[in-house]
Amino acid sequence: MTDRRSYVVGAVAGALAFVLAYVLVYALTISAVRDSLFTGVAEAFGDEDAAWKVVGWLFFNAQFVTTTITVDLPLVGGTDAVNFITESDSLSPVLYLLPPGLLTVAGLATARLDGAADVGRALRIGPSVALGYLPLSVLGALLFAVTVGQNSGGSPTLVTAVGLAGVVYPLVFGTLGAAIGAASSGDESRPAPQSS
Image 1 (tube, one colour):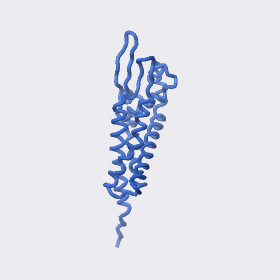
Image 2 (tube, rainbow, N blue to C red):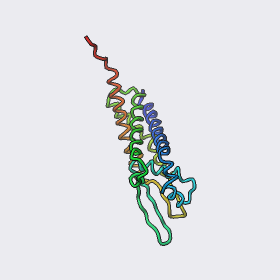
Image 3 (cartoon, rainbow, N blue to C red):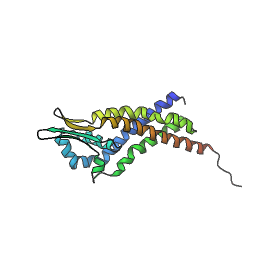
Image 4 (cartoon, rainbow, N blue to C red):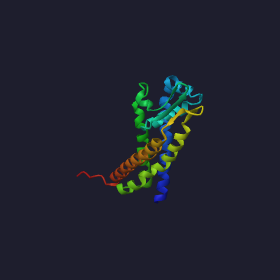
């Protein structure tokens, strides 16, 4: 497979990993978002449809991207960076495994579809997972913002949403998955030892 086609496959795999990770985080957290303190956060921000955005905060929190909360009200104000998964007893730390696990699978699938059988090839095509994951990370960081009035609201911290979630995670885990895919492909192509 040509490099160009492999990069397209990697980008699609990265985009699918992003969407699937968000869907799984949504499925695992939506009841907590609606029924616990997250409902209060969403309602305080005056957005009745904010639940899916707060799930987006958790999606990024699962990649160690904090949520920046800004409150600018009379007599009360300030900005805080929060990871709700770390600070909540009701959310499972399993959420931290979803993005890296799916990105690893995306890298593995990219290597398999490419037919990569050596680690050098995997190191070239594995990072292509970021081509699909990064744009969605930027878009998600912007779409998951909840704004109240002119100066209050919450959103994923943009710098780490782009740098950590959008670049580092897919580069590391996409490449790891591609290397695993290439190594296991090489194992499968070796003839099985014959018994005498």
